[in-house]
Amino acid sequence: MKTDSPLSGPSSPSQDRPSLDAPQLSILIPLYNEVENLDPLIAALLPVLDKIGRTYEILLIDDGSQDGTTEKIVACSREHASIRGVILGTNYGQTAAMMAGFEEARGEILIPMDGDLQNDPEDIPHLLAKMEEGYDLVSGWRRDRKDRDFGRRLPSRIANWLISNVSGVHLHDYGCSLKAYRHRAVVDMHLYGEMHRFIPIYVRWNGAKIAEIPVRHHERRFGKSHYGLQRVVKVLFDLLVVMFLLRYSQKPMYVFGACGLVNFGVSFLAMSLAFYYKFFGHKTLIQTPLPVLSAFTCMLGILCFLMGLLAELSIRTYYESRGKKTYGIARRTNFPPEVR
Image (tube, rainbow, N blue to C red; front, side, top):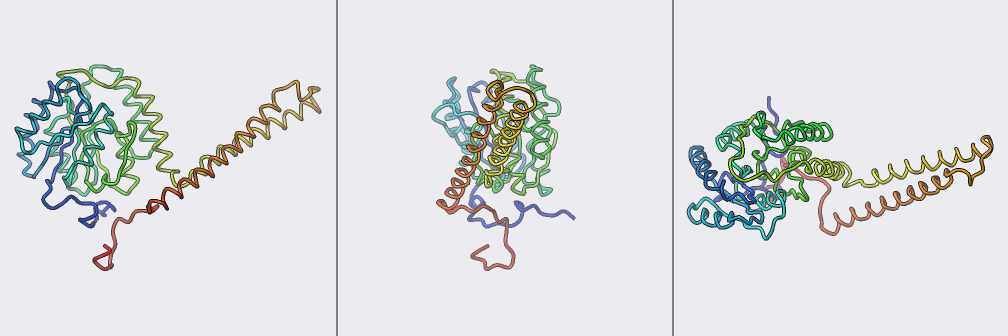
């Protein structure tokens, strides 16, 4: 028997569901200098959405384009009532554009996709069909990637392997934008930097059920890719931040305290060796750098403990000043209607 995930159970419409007159689907497309791709993308997307038979909206998020994409979005929104444009003030990056789409979307199911024609709109019905099996997030897997540059595919595989093993959320393709989310799974999520690829980790650690299905991938026809090898380093840094936030955001002393203990251990070992050399190695304390190393690491240990205490105070101030809770309730049973 299939069990419901916390996010797929009944919930209060006023808290985490769009209004009743909202569309069932929201297609989110961040765009940056994709003016040549926009018309073919809309032409391919609209028939698929009409065939699905659900109400929908298409959000075109312009991330500070400079090639006429902005004007094209305005024209598309005037031509099609289901298309809405979100024009950002400047180029903030894909994560910020994705967050803007999440916050502006009204649909019960959110489906982001790339605007470069490499994702196939025909895969959207497959994502929805898989979601009907009780999943909160269905992620696309570009099993047969068509990127011409092997330098993009190999780092991507390494990054996917690393993220899966460090986070415990095993997906083949974290970088695939084509995914389907239930609105309530991402409604309270806030992303910074370039952490859009880690959304599955956030929602999974909040109790969501995740599935992954293969999707088609096409070669880029127009424009050029905005990704490079420098993204690998950014992924590593972002992964460290995500792991810290998810595991230690409410207990930072565990991290800083552990670093302090390591430094105290090194300090003790260095001073022990210094005294050993003094009494048995015929070397005075000024003939070896060990005393300096011992003092330095001891000071670092003290600083780590003080930083841990400050972090603990900051966390408590954050939660108590804003009235936030350190837990989330998925649903209640046998409670009065007003508190459900």
